[in-house]
Amino acid sequence: MTTIQSSFRDALGRFATGIVVVTGEMPDGSPIGITVNSFSSLSLDPPLILFCLGKTTEKLKAFIEGENFVVNVLAEDQMDISNIFAKSQDDSFNQVKHDFGEVGCALIDGALAQLECKKHEVHDNGDHYIVVGEVVSISTPNDSDPLLFFKGGYRTLGDKA
Ligand SMILES: Cc1cc2nc3c(=O)[nH]c(=O)nc-3n(C[C@H](O)[C@H](O)[C@H](O)COP(=O)(O)O)c2cc1C
Image (cartoon, rainbow, N blue to C red; front, side):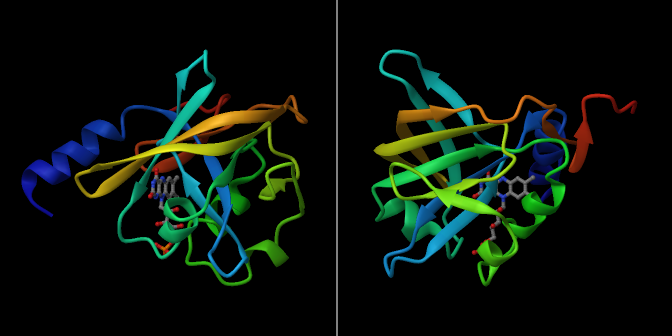
């Protein structure tokens, strides 16, 4: 990593985020999930959200070729789920309780919010794609606190530095 890449990563790590698992379907029909902290709201009318997807992940096809996905916003007790979906896909869904929603992608049990989306657009930028989704169904099944990511590690709202 060059000096600029390292200071870029360090600076961006100072921007605290939540963590989501975006679930989708691979071309062979198998469910897929990827841990993401580049999630953002984009538009209220129409209701659009976005996330950034690295071009090297094996999970890419689910979101480039697939039409639907679900954004699952993780709760503070779901660090293990974040770690499961930050690895290459194998038997992730055997380890995580879930149902399937309206658009056919996994709704993870215990998530703070589940945004079911239809793919709207994909933008090619640098070493990532920006995936934009139109939200077609919303659930907020859990009211507890969020899992956070800051300076390369997990945090919760009550943490002191
Ligand atoms: C907290 C956290 C946030 C992440 N955010 C992103 C992200 O925004 N975009 C992305 O493409 N990968 C992100 N990742 C990495 C992916 O989860 C990881 O590369 C992928 O699940 C591994 O699949 P692969 O082996 O097929 O690449 C993140 C990982 C963690 C732990």
